[in-house]
Image 1: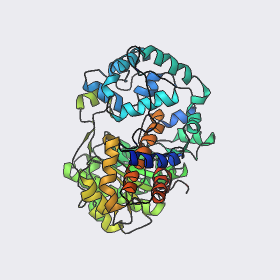
Image 2 (image 1 turned 135 degrees about the horizontal axis):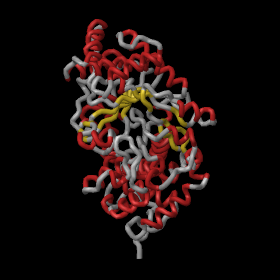
Image 3 (image 1 turned 90 degrees about the vertical axis):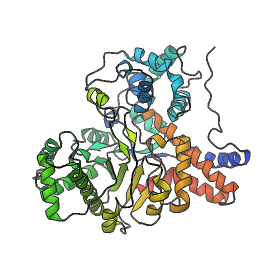
Length: 472
């Protein structure tokens, strides 16, 4: 007999009866609200081509570093999971890779990955046995059969999952051809790009000089000069905005910002282009570009996201073989108060500027981030991110920021996922945790239940919509 897969209706709504009762009532009111997914990494070509997904492995395993980082930690090779080597198509069959995944599915017990996947298996595909070596073939065949249906094509998924708005993340040099095709299909108001300029603003990015040269070609600006470079970036931002973008995203190693003179910027930029800049100079340049991006956001209205606190591609052997985003990104300590000061001295009091801060360093939530966001009009706090996108992580986030920043200096929840089918699972979990947290305050008489209900609705729907200027 296979173990039965069951999703308990009251899961994550609290351990005590009184809290759980209140949380259940709150969750009933927010469970079916539309999903706003303003930051993520799903593939725009999925929605442009609107083709059926080939198989369960390429849909659920290959794009999801949460899955293969755990398996890799237990000695499972990425090759065996059908992960392409240096961009070349894998020779491992999808069923073979799925069987390995099923054999080791028990490794995910206690992780948010298991929560998301069980939700997808149960709610989307109607599976009622736990995935294991015994049920691997059944899973594969049943999911494969359903993936051939029109109801599970990417655009239909938007309706199936009640996704009102979804933003992808796209490089500064991207042609946005997929988004043009999405717009022609009538979905441009629901699936939009996000401007990610790291390849042309971070001197440590591979091919930085070639990327800047390409920036010149596609904008007609002389991007190898400081003023031409800034003009070219403004050009690309407008291009993204014309395709529906509402935000930018910056994956910097730190929150360091700079405010240098024009002469200093010219000299520093020239050194970065020549490859002569040392580590400190590169950090100053990245910091200056955050300040420049804030200035541009003040002009064009794009929301600015800053994702920091992570050492990316820590496993160099894995990076050299498989490329980036293969589960080897590790949280590092972060400092915000002094790091952001140059930017905030210029723009912190601008209420029309919106800068959303994310970090993997939880120790900064109550010490730095909540006090900063609780003061500066331009700052908002992004939700618990990445490794902390978990039941305990989201609860710790609310506990550490709510008293100082309040709820309305945060931006609700965004799923930040490459795995399309995990979007409803992640939002379901976030709404449950928020309802549990709010219910605790109701039981403590810190909130009335009516106040908690309004907050629950705002956190689930209105705050992300407002923060990312979705209606605009």
